Length: 322
Length: 252
Image (cartoon, rainbow over all chains, first blue to last red; front, side, top):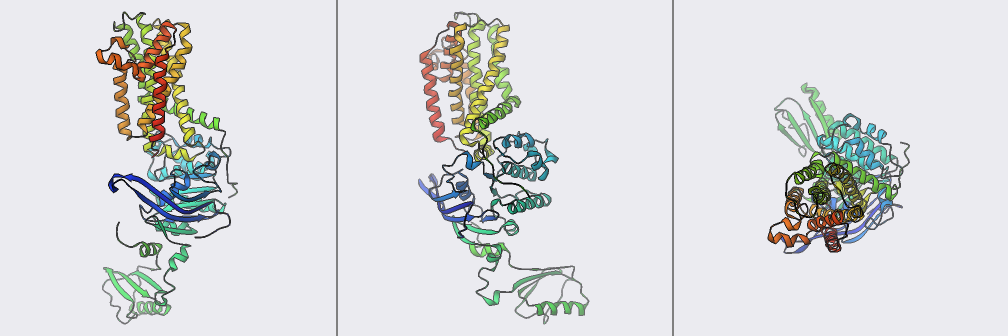
C-alpha cells in the first residue's frame, strides 16, 4: 500500500461481516476481509473490481453509511463512524443509484442541498458547468440516465467538498456527457480534490485514475499506477515484453506466409479483418507495410494495441464468471 | 480552476428548518397526500354533521365530530403520509444520500417531524375554519390540552409510520398504512367514539393510539378535561414504536 504524507482517506485492514444469514445456516458472511488503501489529495484513486467484489461496501464504510466490523478508517483525519456534520460538509458523495427524489426538480433540489453548507458552490455556476440548465424544469423521474448522473454529480459537488466519492460515475452517460464529466473530474483533481472512484469499467480507470487498487473477493489483489499495472508480469518475461496486436482491414483472403515471422499469429477474424498478435518488432511492421506497398494494398484501417487494463484484471482475478 | 475547496456545515437549526420546509412543501404538492390530509377529513366532518351517527353523545354533532377529525388528520399526515414518502425515499436512496450531507440521519428525522407538525398546523387551521362555519363551539379550556395531545399523537403516529417504512418494501408500506388508516379511521375509536363501536372493539380501542387520541381530544374539546390514561397510552406507543424504529429501521 502507498503511504502518502497526508492521505485524505486511509483504510487499514477493513473487515465487514453481514448477517447472520439464513442461507448460511445463520452464519455471518464476510464480504470484505482486510482491504487496505490510501487516497491522496489532488489525485484520482480508483477501486477496480467485478460486481460483488466488495468495492461499494468498502467505500460505504468510509462514507459512514455502513459500520465496519474491524480495521481502521480515517477520512480527513477523522473516524467516519463517529464524526459529525463538520466532516460530512467536507465530503461529497455520488451514489450509484443517484439518491435523488423522483418528484424533485433539479434547481430547487440543488439549492436545498446547498443550504446545508456554509460555503457552497454557487448553484447557477454548477448547473451551467454540468449542462443541467438544459433540463432544469424536468422532474428527476423524467430525466434520462445521463442527465440523472450529471445531477447526482452536481448534488455531490454543491457542498464544495475536499473529498469526492464517485460510484460508477459513467453508468448511463452518452459520449458527450461522459466527456463533460471526465473533464470536470480532471479539473477538480488539478484543483486539489481527493477523488475516490469505484468502477468495474476498466476504461474509466484507465482514463481517469492516478492510482488503482484492484479488489477481488473482498481483498486487495493488485495496486499501482495504470502504467505499472499494465507492465505487471511482463518485465519478468522478456519474450512477452513487446506483445502487441496489430488490427487492420484489407481485402479478404490475403496470404501472409513469409511476410511476418512464424511466431506472429495472423488470423482473418472475419472476411477482410486481420489480427496479428505476437512480439512485433519495428522490422516486422516495416516488412508488412513494404509487402502492402508491393501488392498495392491500402488498409481501410489499422491500429496497434497493447495489453489493456482489462487483460491485466482478467489475468489477476480469473476469467470465470462468478 | 481557482476554487478554494472545503466547506463547513450550516448551523444545525438552519439545516433542520430547511429540511422541514422542503418535506412539508413536497407533501403539500403531492395530490394524493393532499386528499388524504385535507379532503377526506373534511368529507368525513361534513358527513358526520349531516347524519345522526353521533347523536346522543352529550354535544352537538359538530362538537363531537371535530376532535375525532383532528385526530384523523394527525394519523393521515404522520402515519400514512410520512410513512409512504419515507418508504419511497428509502427505495430511491434519498435517505442514504441525505445522510451523507451535513443534514445527517438525526437532522433528516428531525426535519420529517417538523414537516409533519407544519402540515398538522395547516390541517387544524383548515378543519377548524370549516368547523366554525358548521357551528363548532369548543371549550376554551380544551385548546391547550388538545394541542399538546395532537403533538403527542403526531409523535406516536410518526414513530409507527417510520417503523413500517423502515422495515418493509415501499409497496407494502403503501398498502399497510392505507389499510390501517381506513380500519383505524372507521373502527379504531378515532372518529366514532368507542360507545358507537361493536362489542369487542369497544374495549380494545382504548389501548390503540387512534382510540386514545380520539378519546383524549373529545375530553379536551367537549369538557375541557385532560385525559391522563389516554395520554399514558399515547406515550407508551411513542416510546415502543420509536425504540423499535431505531432498532430495526433499515436505511437501504
